[in-house]
Image 1 (tube, rainbow, N blue to C red):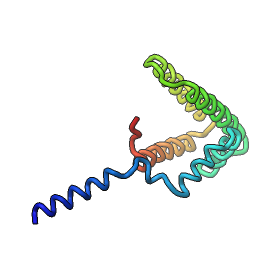
Image 2: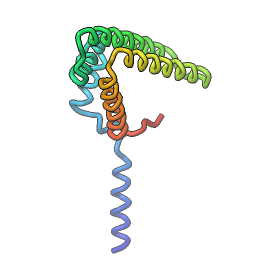
Image 3: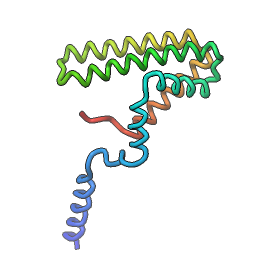
Image 4: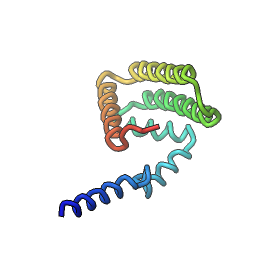
Length: 145
């Protein structure tokens, strides 16, 4: 009986590990993700601004400033995507440069947001940003390269 249970357990574990990586991403959610990737930077910026308007109750002047900020970020992201596709492997120094530039952009973006939003709006934005990061981490886990 013990041998039969061990064989059953071994077979069960083997079938779980035999699942292809990313098998959970199939279906309508993956299709939606693919369609969102095809949006232009202008469309992405508008959608992000509208989401922020709903979450933070932005005034019309804040909306226009944040739209411009989101548009700048979206165009920068498109440029980085194109550069990544062109390059194959990168050295440690190039990785350091990329990461440093990305962090500089994040710092500048945070400063701009802080100057555009009120204190209460900025606190709410920070809380939602942290929650979104936790949710993404919990949903997808750490990516293995």
